[in-house]
Length: 143
Image 1 (cartoon, rainbow, N blue to C red):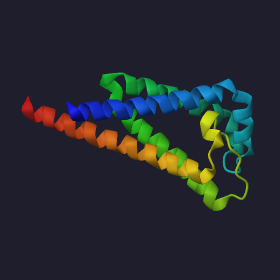
Image 2: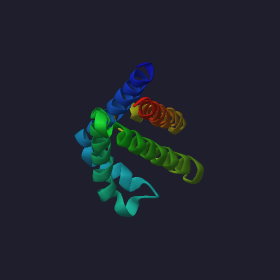
Image 3: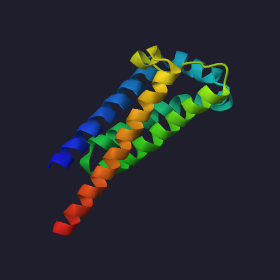
């Protein structure tokens, strides 16, 4: 039961993060798309990425809410967080120009703070996967 509650809390935190991030991007979509276009690494396909990111965040949040699809949501959360964290790492390491395309509270963070923030949520996603998988394996052994 305790492990189930931990996965529920991790999932809820991820849902909140993804919904908050998606809504803040969509509410100021033109600014978000413009700032993505300023990125030296995704300029050529920033229009597509501008729609894909919030859409993906919403889809992952929905998967996390539904118990049957939660493990898929956790894997996709981990993948998205790795992707976002990797992007920030590359920007910090190789770009002299750092446009911020984040919305809401996250836009107030420095790039280094955002990197640490993402590392924490990447770790939460991985923890949720590990706990869920261990819980599922024990459940199968009992049955």
